[in-house]
Length: 238
Image 1: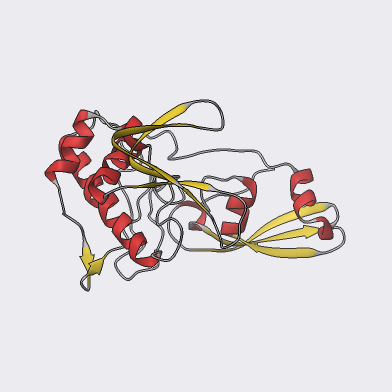
Image 2 (image 1 turned 135 degrees about the vertical axis):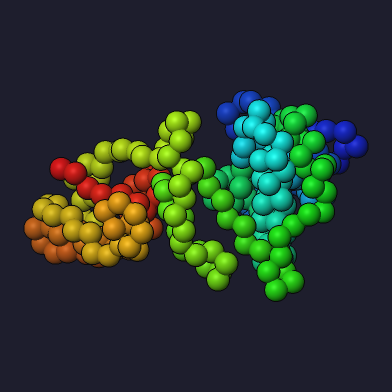
C-alpha cells in the first residue's frame, strides 16, 4: 500500500523520531513473496534533489557550490534510476548512494540552488554520467569505473574545516580473528598492493592476514567495510 499527500507526509522512524516527506510513501516488498516491507518515497526528481543537497552540503556554503552539488546530485540520481528501473527502489538514502533527508532536510538556500539548476545534468556519450562525490578525498581521488573518473590529486582537500582529511581508528586482533577464525592467532598484517597515489603508496588493494594456522588475502574494500574504516587509504601501526 501507499500514502499520498498534496503537501507533506510525516513518517515515524523506528527510533521514534519523525521525518517529513513529499508526495508518496510506499510500503514496498523487497522481493517477490517477501513478508517484510521497506518504506520508499516516490516523488519527482526535482523534489528529490531538494532533499539531497542540504543533506550533502552545508546550506551556508556559497550558492555556486550549492548549485554544483545540485547538478551532481541530480545527475547521480538519473544515472542510478536508469540502472535500477526494475528494483523496488532506485536510489538509497544513505552515504552508500547519496544522503536524502526528505522535506525535513530542505533549506531556503539549497532549494534556491536546486531551482536555479532545474533540469541541468552532466552527460557522457548522451547518458547521465556517474557523478560520484565524497566529503573528503584524502588528497587524491580514487579511480572510478568510468573513463571520465581518473585518479587525480585534490589539492583543496586539506583545508582547516575538513576533519576527515586524516583519520585514525583501532582494530583489535581479536576482531580480526573473530572474522577470520581459520587463521588462528593473528601474527602479522601485510599490505600487498596499493594504487600508487599519495602517502604510503595510496589506497590499499589487498592485505595479507597471517595467523598461527594459516593466512588469508582480503581486498582493501573488504577490510574497509568489514571493520568500519572510512576508506581504503590506510596503514597499520602496532
